[in-house]
Structure formats: structure tokens, C-alpha cells
Amino acid sequence: MLAGSRLLSAEEIYRSIDWSIVVLLAAMIPVGQSFETSGTAAIVAEALGHVLAGAPPVGALAALCALTLLLSIFLNNVATAIIMGPLALDAAALIGLGPDAALLAVLIGASSDFLTPIGHQNNLLVMGPGGYRFTDYARPGAILSVLVVGIAATFLALV
Image 1: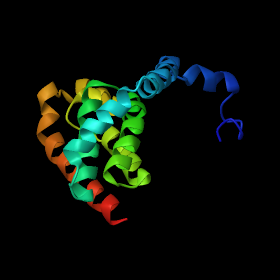
Image 2: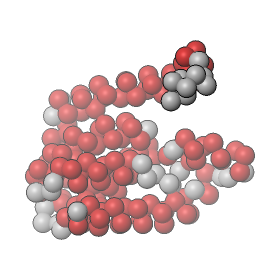
Image 3: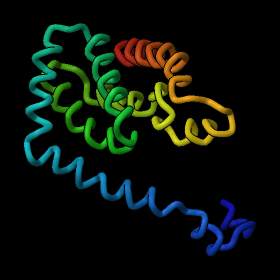
Image 4: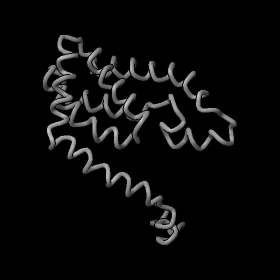
């Protein structure tokens, strides 16, 4: 839009792109694909399917969402979604969940790391200027994460 209205030149737009993020995201796609093609996703999905077998849809979706959230604490949220997507599809097929609900649970979980400042770029941006410590994120973040997982799982199971 800005380029179309000539408010920014193409050079300014290209200079503003954080290419390290683009390269990171591009590098994560093969990681996710290798996770699936190597059979690791199927093995983990089968184990997850056995654990969640007989669980109500709300519980299964909450578990997928929470597992993704916990993984996103250690990895970039996009990398987590790329890795968890195939796993969630396989697990959903094993336990009888809809693939759309499982993928949405993964996407919500990957975007809901409020527990650490490294969970999202915005958390890091305000850490220094706000004078926050690492542990300051866990207190309100734990409550918010539980609320998001619970509401998302309930809504996805109903829809």
C-alpha cells in the first residue's frame, strides 16, 4: 500500500525488511519437512495419539495447544508451527479430531507464549525500556496462557 501510493520508495521498503528473519523462516521450512519425511512426526503423533486416546475433543485440543505453546518457549513460534503442524494432523487423524481444529490449536499455541520475553519479539522490545526482568513475564503470562489455551480449546471443540 505504501509503495503503491508512492509514500515509500521500493529501496526504502527493501531496506526496512529484516532479512535475517526471512532467512530464518526459509530455513525452518526444510526442518519441518524433514521432521515429517523422516517419520519422526508420525512416531511422535502416534505416541501423542495413545496418550490422548479417549480424551474428549476439548482435552485433546487443549493438549495440542499447550504442547505447541511449551515448544514455542524454546523455539521461534514459526518454527514451532512448522514442526507441530504435521504432528497435529497425524495425531488428529489417530484420535478422530478434525484437521482444521488441530491446526488452529497449533497456530494459537504457537502465538501464545506469554511466559518469557523471548516468546515474541514485542516482549523483548519492551523488556529493556520497561525495566522488566525475565521472571516478570511468567507471573501474568502463566494466567494468560492458561486462559488462551482453555478458551481456544473450548471454542475449537464447539465449532
